Image 1: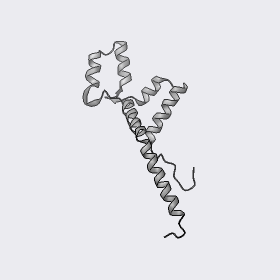
Image 2: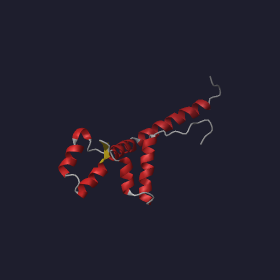
Image 3: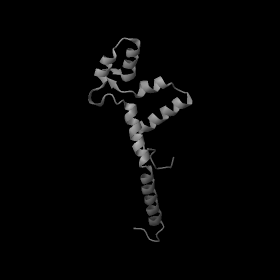
Image 4: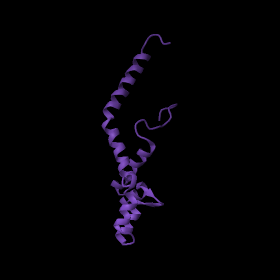
Length: 118
């Protein structure tokens, strides 16, 4: 950490960083896939998609009830898909972001290399 510069993400939000770190934990076997989806799955009426899906598998809820509950107004899109889409969009724009950062660094270096400063 550079003295005087607050530690903050520049491209990713704190939530996106947490999401990525949690997924890497799944990949390394530190947490289970179920724990990941338990944390990041969508919620509706106090329950999560995964919980209701488990109820369907156990026969406590019919598939039709599950479908009716989770189909409205994009509820079928769980938070995992939303996060993945946001990260994909940032990845696609990464070259542009890096180009802009390099241009700003070049401008700063040129500015501070001047013999006289304002």
